[in-house]
Length: 189
Image (tube, rainbow, N blue to C red; front, side, top):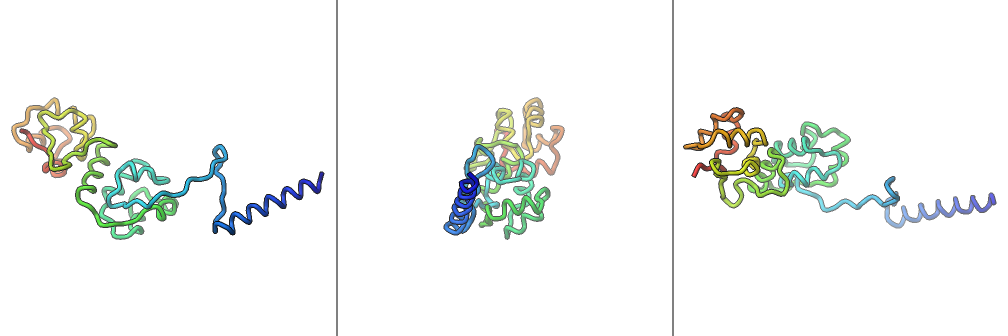
């Protein structure tokens, strides 16, 4: 019986050693239900990635994803180390899963809009040159605007009608800084 156990141990060691040498890396099953860890997908571009794509990275939550979007554009992957919330450990998890490409204006503004509103998979504000009419938009449509969440959207609806887009600055919580982010993608017509 002792020989049998040592034979199985030796066989298991041989199988592990063989799989490491054949693939160049150990095939270690994860602790969940004995499944293998998934292979990393294609690298995502941190200059154009959506909030959902960023949040899919290991260790990146919604707050960190927003910080990444706010810090765009990046020139090098190493620039992510400067983003608030990205610890050395998180950077080590994501550095081989991301790349830095040319910032795309439309995709970048779309992701910024998504990051500030928390929307995922919704029609994006200002896409295809279409502006959001702040006098007619639903709460969900208003939340697609950068910096507008559910509370501000309801305040905008209650403050209607607006004669000019500048009138939105009368809404509590929307000052010059917030207005500058949305002025090009809103209308009152």
